[in-house]
Image 1 (cartoon, rainbow, N blue to C red):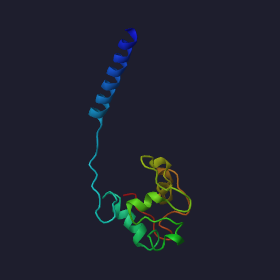
Image 2 (image 1 turned 60 degrees about the horizontal axis):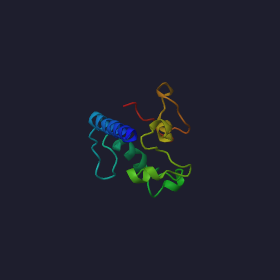
Image 3 (image 1 turned 90 degrees about the horizontal axis):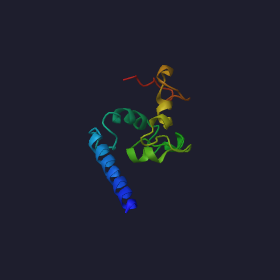
Image 4 (image 1 turned 180 degrees about the vertical axis):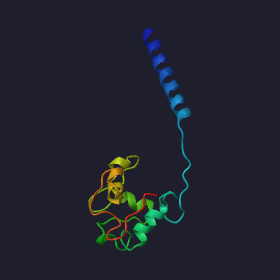
Length: 122
């Protein structure tokens, strides 16, 4: 009898936690660019990476095997493995190859875009 009471309390607590977390979740609406699947905020950056003849499906073999032509191909990674970790931007090397301002975090060499002016902080 006592075991049933404990199980009911645990079940009630689990249900309460579930309800609180689902109510408190704040989901942002993400607008996705239709042509490549990237969120609209980063689609212009990815277009520069893939349209410059570097990280697209045709020339990816000369660019570390990485294609940034679409959202799906970005998650396939390149010769060195994954460059983008879902929900883990701090572990995503793509971030550090495009960062040229060491005051904003680590930078990796060669910085991208390779042999071109760096991306602006905007």
